[in-house]
Image (cartoon, rainbow, N blue to C red; front, top):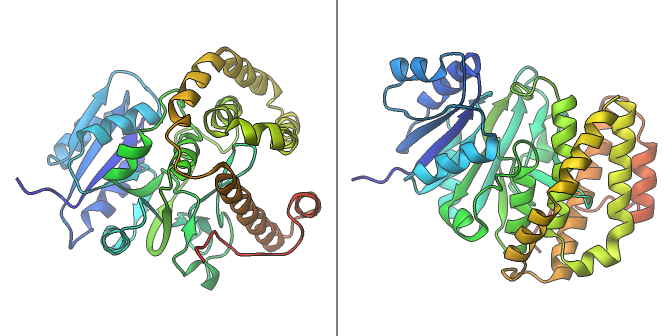
Length: 358
């Protein structure tokens, strides 16, 4: 049996109205053989029946209830047979040659284990949605380039901390080494967690600007920040830190880590999400014993030193802050707090736009 070049895994929850655009764009991909696995996460909008009628070659995994992003994509990964695994949100549209460029790039860059395409806002295609993921020292994540104008700055392939799992190509070795997505992450930051794990293992990610994905965003949860996102992001930021930071870093860097979480608390209060924040803190507290078990499971497998790992995190955060300054400047917003933070913890030198090998 011929092994496909890629398996495209799409999780979907009540997303039939989104899938029509997504699947049509997948059908326009050529040059390489691929299979599609759709994970229907307990949809009640007839998703599975519609896909069976219109795309009979797509393999459908159907859950009776919404089990969250991580459970869904993990099952899709287990069912995959392609040389590469392409995770894709249902609220996306692929550029005509996106998959071809991603596979060609992966074949030509064996030193990388994951690949991040250029994500562009679906409704305003002059603005970026993301160009690879960066991480904050406090455990949060950020799509580099978000709401910045697409331009020459973003037209060069560079190493980034990780890929946004809403559109990312992975070598099979990535999941063999780093494991699959943590299923305690029902939603949000599951890709940040696995990117931290991959970084500790020396698995690198490459941003691929020629591969374009148009992303609508926040189509399943309803908005970028609500009670659902506030609760899950709060508890998952804590999970990321506990799972992935060695004790030496926690002891030395706890002030700046706590500063991030204090900033998140202030944001939750300003956005009137304090009850959801407390709910997330409570969930993290009760889940702490499980976090420690998972932390110990991965602690002995690191191949990158603690100092090198922390340096990657700091450089990635600097990439985020540079990106945020550009974004806020473009939209005419104040950046005083960002500049103050940079002055205290990074110095004000611009530095590199993204993490690059020297």
